Every structure is written in C-alpha cells, then in structure tokens.
Amino acid sequence: MSPRPHSSGARPGARPVARSRPGPDDLRRTFEAVPARTSGDDEPFADSWWGRAWVTALEDLSMDAPRLARGRAYADSGNVAAITVTPGRVVAYVHGSRPRPYRAELRLRTLTDPDWDTFLDAVAARPGHLAALLAKEMPHSLADTAAAAGITLLPAADDLDPGCSCPDRGWPCKHVAALCYQMARLLDADPFVLLLLRGRGERELVEDLGRRNAAHSARERPAAPATPSVPAQEALSDRFLPPLPAPFPVEPHPGRPPSYPEFPGARDPLALDQLATDAAARAHALLSTGTDPIAGLTAWQDAVRLAAARPTAGLTATTRALYRELASATGRNTTDLARAVAAWRQGGAEGLTVLETPWDPPAGPFDRARPALAAAGFPRFQPWRNHLTHPGGTLQLRFGHDGRWYGYESDPGEDEWWPRAAPDSDPVGALLELSGG
Image (cartoon, rainbow, N blue to C red; front, side, top):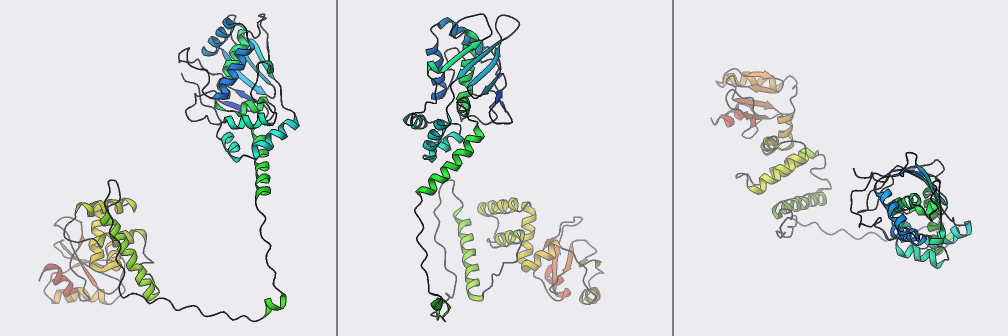
C-alpha cells in the first residue's frame, strides 16, 4: 500500500507522503501516519536536497549508528503514528517492541521577528523564490539568500533537541530517530513544513511575501512621466482637425490566398485554402457593401454553407474528412450534413429552413397548389403543414417562406426525404422538374 499524497500537493516526481490537517490558526499541522515503505533499504529517505540535509543533520547528531539503523527500520515499517508540527516542535507516537507506543519529540530553534523580516525581505526581492515556494520547491539559491542575510533555515546538528518517553538514554533514541526519518519525507514534499518549524505558517508567509514582493516591485518601477498641462483657454478654444484620408479603392475581386504546403500532421492544405478563400470573399463583400453576407448564420448553417462550397463531383477523401469535422463540431452526423448540403445547394439558407422546419402557410398559394396539380393530370397529393406528398410516397413538394416550391424524393416505403431539383414558384413546374417530365 503506497502512502497517500500530501494535501497541499507534492513536487512532480516526489515520493508521496501523508496528508496533513492544518490547524485553524495555520500554526499547527497534523500529518496522518505513513504506511510502511516497499522500497529497498539502500534508497535515500528523501529525494530533495533539503530533505537530505535534514537526514544529514540527524545523522550528525547521533554517534550511535545501530540506533539510527533501528530508527530507520521503524520508519520504514510504518511504526510512526500521526505527526504534529508546530513552531519549534515535532511530536509523534512511535510503536516499539512494547504494546504501548512511546511519545517522541524533537525541538528546533525558531526565528525571531527581526530574523523573519530580514529573510522575507531578501526573498521578496527575488520573485523566483516566491514562485518556487508556491511550487513546493526550495532552490539552493533561496537557502543561499537566507544564509547571506545571516538566517539559517536548514538545521545543523546542534539545532535539534530530541526527547522521548522511553527509558533509552540514546542521543537520540531509536524512536526519535524514526520520527526524524519520517520528517524528512514530509519536508521532501513540502518545504513549508520546515518554515513552520522555524515559526511561521504557510498562509501567513504567502500573504506576507506577496505584500513585500508588490512593494518591492513598486519601488523598482520607474516613475510615470508627468502629464503635460494645457492652459484652460487653449483647451476650450475651437479646434480644426484635418479630414481623414480617402480609403483605398476596393479591388474588383477578392484576393487569392497563398498556397499552403503540406506537412505531416498539419492541417489539410485544401481545407485551409477553402477557409482562406471564404474569408477573403466575405471581407471583399464587407468592404464593397458594408454588410457581411453571412453575419446572421448560426454555427450549423455556416457549417452547411462551408461544406456546400466543396466540389459536387463525388466525395473525395478530403471532403469526407471535412464533413466528419463539421458534423462533429455541430453535434450532427455526416448523413445529416450531406442532406443539409443538398438543401443548401437547392435554395441556400431558405432551402435549409425548408428541409428542417415545417410551418403552416397562410391561405393562398398553398391552397391553390392541389387544384393546379390535379388540373395538370397529377394524382391528389396529401397535405401536411407546408408539405404536399404524392400518394405513391416517393415525391414531395415543400412550400417555402419565399413563395417557391422545393422538390423532395424518397425511396418507396421509406421516410427519408432528400432535396432534388431546383425550386420553382409554380408547383406544377417544380413537380415536372422533380419527376423529369
């Protein structure tokens, strides 16, 4: 079973550690017990240089290698219970050979308020240091900056003061050693634990560093030039601006886009050419007339318009790919798009509306269509809203808002109507065109 990740986020690639529960005042964090390790004994207990520096301080504190080895074995075996970190103090219960665990404790000197002011001012002057801390990193340069200001963040052997409720008088005993090794894993994932040990919580530090960094940036920012003043009499006097130059004349035709080379994994050059040509045509129309001819189209209508602009002689591989992309982008399938393209080619945006939106025509031309068809020798068509359907079920006329009749065709016994032939203001002419008569 692997240790659970830290609640505030571990560094990329770092070994997962226990989750912590921050106290209400940001000065107390309790880390859940970490399960036993499954890695080999020769693996370092910490990945980061500051975590290893903590281990070095522990090992420098002890002159008893066997006790350190037993403490490391306890930490590896998951014998360390929940760890509570407060300023200057780390406490945990460690299970040893007896049923009752021992209370292990480690003390560390905290920084004074002047020390913190010196350290935070030095860090705020380097924006990269704040970014590194927020990313749960402690670069060597940050520790060097603190050291140059006379502040020691990482412990030396004489900084650590161990204590334990066990009868062993070792310095430190194996229970404190286990606690120290486990602390290295916490520091490895979150350097703010070390800063809490030195006396300040994460939330307070981040807010303080943010304020100091902003103040430092403001001091370094060059002063804005003074705004030139204008006498009131001059400001209120009449001003005469020269006329704008005449616009360039509009070209008679849209420009041609450049040729697009084909690269592996790049967009299809023919599709790019189509999009560029379409954009040029729209820009030319806008310059010439002041209006965009397709400004009112929906995303679906525009997708159908773009697909309808492709060559009509069969679907090439490029066209099929374009259909798939446009259909997917608009939540439709390629059959829906192909049918809509046929309607667009039949009658533009109105043709698409006729395909997709049945409506109830007012009295007039629609009512006169059936007698006109009967007088021309056609059988009696069945009406439904703006549709007239041949009794054989294979031909259909649909009346559009533009007063024209649109021809549709379906296979016998199917309800799959496809736009066919050009629309006509005369229903008889539209039906003759549809039936090839």
